[in-house]
Image 1: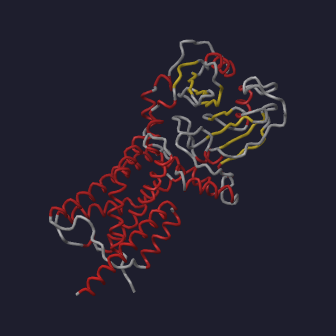
Image 2: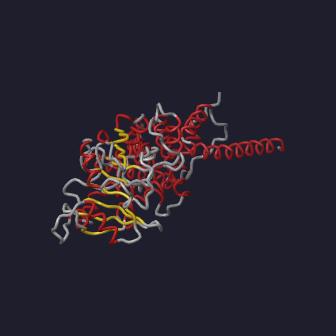
Image 3: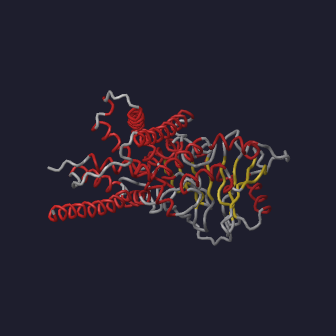
Length: 448
């Protein structure tokens, strides 16, 4: 029986590490930068988040909305985020060109300042982390492929550590010391790093969309009617698990000119009061009806991407109010989510580092630093072997891959389709090289 498992795993581990390390370092550094975006933005945008207007007179939220509409002509009101003290409330507006602004209101509902959300620290770091500032779909695929190969690096690294009995080796050479350090860090990081990778799946362009589609097609698992489009780190504040629900429609068929002047529409103050009657406390967001059949959507989310707006996953709720009567049409809580919705609701804030406060951030930070250390130890181990005159790259054992190696890669390829496609390409190349070398060897032996 062919037992060529170690060699292909070793070579795949080596070449994959070299191929994805630059992007891995970039993702780790940008992810580390994003961990503390609430603290950074609270410092950078202190006036916007916590400042007071020079106007001391108190006005209603409806009056504030009318003032914003008059001041920002050509913009429509998208949503209102009712914040908890000490944060200022936010009003998000946008125009037909796709430009948007965030207007900050103090506790008197007076305008404090405005901000272009695309120029904020969190937007920069999120875009840097997901697509290296390119907003390119191809780059997002490459980021997902890197995450897939990271899973393989973890698994293959653990396998080789125990296969080589590296931890029990008494050799005191500097090369082996770095290799041991690389292996020990890899084993220690295996579970937390795997968790971080898996909880990043909701943003992935391929796997995320497939999981979302599966959840929509299997209500007993999803129950959130997830759409085909996966979640992104830069969408609105509606909880991800209900963001793509088919919203219920209001009963009244009255035609509307826009979301502010719809005849018979409830006032914003009325909707806020209705939300409080439903035990929806601040912070929460209100999204205006999209048309005359739409509803007011009031939500609390655990993955808003807005400092001061996140809540515990257990507190997530989304309520739909008839825009004419103000009656609650439907209300969905965390308990109503399926396993996929609950997984994402927990996973996203865990990945971003705010599921359980500062300890979550510190834990993620330690994992990121240790991961960079593991990468460094692996590189130094390779450099030491070069100095000793040994092979710079793992030598290819010209044997067919073992059944164990093939099955392991096949399983990973099914779970992670992009990884499977890349492995298929590698396997074809390996097969060509194997038979080409074999034929050359046979030809050489015949010519003797």
